[in-house]
Length: 218
Image 1 (cartoon, rainbow, N blue to C red):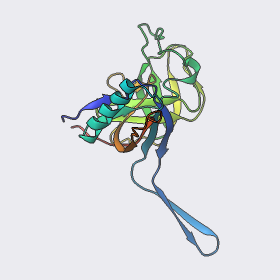
Image 2 (spheres, rainbow, N blue to C red; image 1 turned 135 degrees about the vertical axis):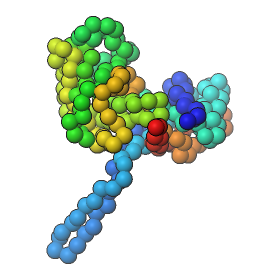
Image 3 (cartoon, one colour; image 1 turned 180 degrees about the horizontal axis):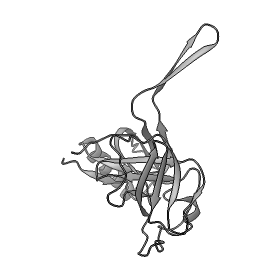
């Protein structure tokens, strides 16, 4: 499958919104009764703002948006929380508990249920807090992003069990295989939904919105 995948331009983008959407409906009935129904696959939406007034930065975002309009997709992340908050400020590094350099990736060893996973090959005592994110990447195009909902810490062997939201699509995301759990710039694949790029002098702040798109590879 030949699809161009871009990274966010490095122009100081601010994240205005980065949230999961869980499709659902609620029916209200006589007698104060309600029934809820969830349907479809949860997906992420995002809104970004480029506050830079520099023409170079403006042009870079312009080119990025043009390529998205031509069919490219991009790896979307929350620029305000690009790694676990306990390690904010610098890319993840260190040593795995079992040896070897740590680059922000771990091994997804088990999916207990759609909201609980086990990750191995982390540094001992690796700290994760509510609101941190983890990306489960099966391949370049098949990936799944989740928010961690409870504090957790890896044990001395570098293994941690995490509670995550939204639910994992276990028909397409599976445990085992190569390194798949990413904590450095955890991302999902998004497509452009809309943008504004005013040309006024002194008012060139560009903004754009996007939503997650799913691909399945054999």
